[in-house]
Length: 396
Ligand code: FDA
Image 1 (cartoon, rainbow, N blue to C red):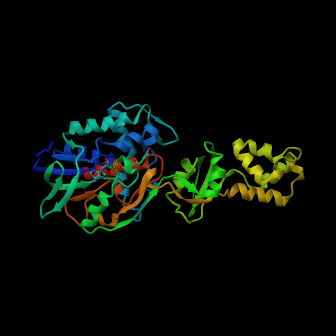
Image 2: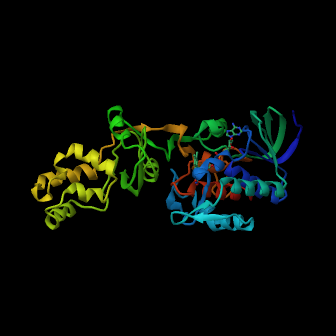
Image 3: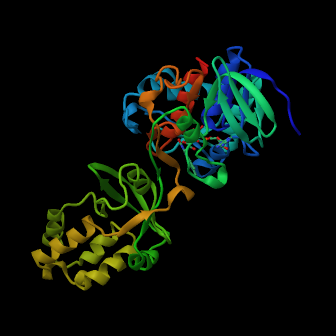
């Protein structure tokens, strides 16, 4: 059914994390706000995030946890709306949550509890939500903007683009935000899927697939950045926190170091030989690595179950090299199909870090993931959505 709304103060396109936050903030200020989304449900990514329990913020969130061509851009908003501010909001609604890894807050029961809070805020604020609505065109005029949609046309003073990035197209992700930005002359920094599993070359894939399902603590290093967290072997390659994190810093074709024994040095192996000459390195490694992984190492080093006293320095060096520079033969990532975020996006040097208004088009605002601001894994990306949404909501 068509709706007829002629004029509102603010149209927010995208009923995701940043859009809902912005809409409620603006409507609480007395603005008449309409949120438009083409999906049949608001906040789909919130529902699927954090394994269904949404890692909704990180108490340590600071600018150093965000990547951007313009690293200073995020500072002001993160300061004006901190993780504690978001925690205060969910506390007012009585959300049950838990801190898993230090700093990372997850819903105790379900991500739906968090989405319910946002929807309650939207309702209390008086913002209106229209789902299943396609935007045909946006016409920027002198003092107003006309948004033409599948359900009617609406005129507004402020238009907020909160349409997110390109990851998980099946959940409604589109490049709409980038298209609107380009329409008014914005520069879009190259986008790529990130916080995403890494795929491996076909001949290595068969070997590593044998290890599918096992996890171990590793150090992943690329371009000078290192994450020491678990890695998970999958049927297609490798995943787990350390791998997802490193994809913010690594691109196919670049060097990627995987150290299976980040707590060991080559000298430690020599000491093992000295201290336990009658025991094998197989036994020693079995205390550090999953059994199936040790079996794979043994196919490369058949002497592994000999007494360590029998191994030469060269053999120990070769073993350490193999373990500390484990070859996963990466050939790419799983792409937007499974990526948590999109790196790159609307160039923030053309957007106000205070109001989030475009410097190219008066009355146009960009918030959330559509901007060239990407957080590490661990609740940082939602914190950016809340902070940018809240801050823009103060000015639209
Ligand atoms: P978001 O993607 O939330 O919302 C965009 C909205 O715009 C959607 O509702 C979409 O339907 C709508 N839209 C798009 N195109 C449109 C168009 N043409 N017309 C109308 N509407 C349109 N982060 C984190 O901090 N902790 C976590 O635990 C996770 N976990 C996680 C898991 C998975 C599987 C994914 C994919 C992502 C995460 N993230 C995350 C990342 C987090 O979900 C993401 O950074 C935020 O949702 C971004 O918020 P936005 O509001 O910018 O976009």
